[in-house]
Length: 260
Ligand code: PGA
Image 1 (spheres, rainbow, N blue to C red):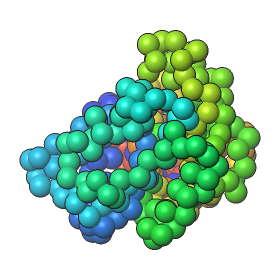
Image 2: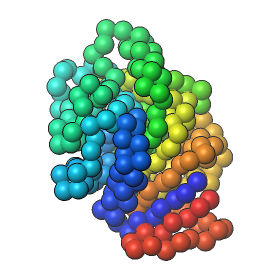
Image 3: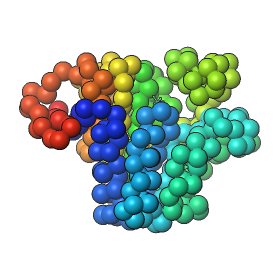
Image 4: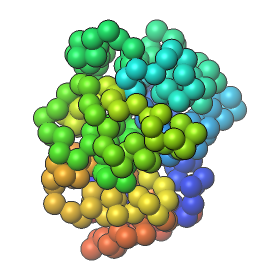
């Protein structure tokens, strides 16, 4: 695993955006898995800047969001669909018919999840997955104890996740939906390349467990130790508890890179 520790959130976001842009330039029809939440906002802002100022072209890119809440009314401002259009899609030239987000209002969430998984396969699989991480080590909405063999399916949110996400619902945990549709661990692990972004001290424990702990379903992100091409982008706070790599580090401008 490669770990890039940036001096701050802005540098972390820019470094991650460079890797995403390099993927699009190398393979313009790349299939991406995309996250929501607070962490990737800087990455999306930088990609929008690259589109506007440097002509980064998203027209052939396909996107699959990692997850969506079940049951929020159409257009709800805390839905991940609203987030993605508001924060990213409306500002770049991603083709609308290449955007995929699980439909949280589907009549049959099981069927919606299976159709979503199938759509990923039909698109040729995920080339490049961008992940955040929960304080409990969740990736997508795959909470602790999720089977590593899981595919896209309806899930229940963990209590800690509901509490953490209440900030997107006017601070009210009771307004956070209890269920979501999420890509599974296997869906994510099948991606050819994975990057994970983490910022802030509240993620430092999960990051250390992910990189140094045992590979266990109790810490879903620990499965990434088994991925052949996975890079972590951290700010200093998120890397706060990370043990140094026995291989030392490569200094860069505003970053240090380590291989574990
Ligand atoms: P955050 O969420 O970026 O809002 O911290 C990450 C996650 O829960 O996966």
